[in-house]
Amino acid sequence: MRLPKQISTALITLAAVAAAAAGAGADSGPETAERAWARAVVQRDFATLEKILAADLIYAHSTGVIENKQQYLGKLRSGVQRYDAIEHGALTVRLYGDAAVVHSQVTMRGVNASGPFNDRLMMLHVWIKQGGAWRLAAHQTTKLS
Image 1 (tube, rainbow, N blue to C red):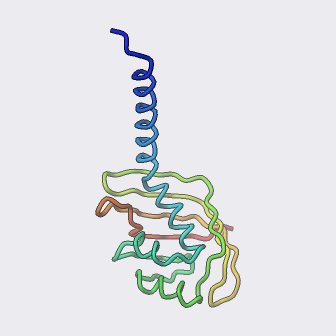
Image 2: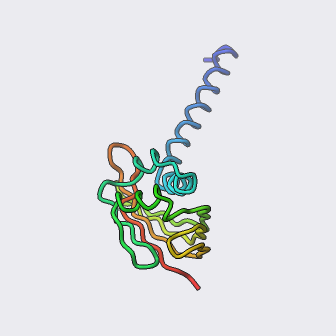
Image 3: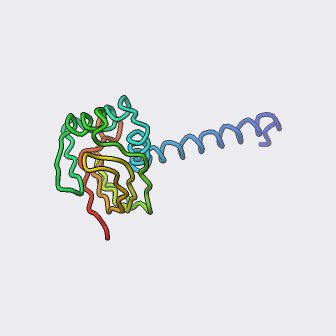
């Protein structure tokens, strides 16, 4: 059975839209969340950070300082800790159901209580899926020489 050209074109368009939507859904995983976190930190977008960060966040800085969500956001809000750039190198993402481990090398530039910093770091993030959204549950960085 041959379909009229208008119906055939409509079906092809619908299939293309569905494929694009499926691709966008697949892209809204931990890697997208990772980049959204970095963008929100640099832009000081605290509303987004409140949503992205898990309530029981463990945030371990390369200095050895460990903070919870309130402490980390408090430093950012006060300006004691400011990130002017977070640039990811290659990301490695490992999915484990509703959890993901994201490993990368990053360069972070900004200012903290000790003054300006420009650090090259290895970063490990643990993301968990809660309520249909990826949330950062743990952060750990190590300075690279």
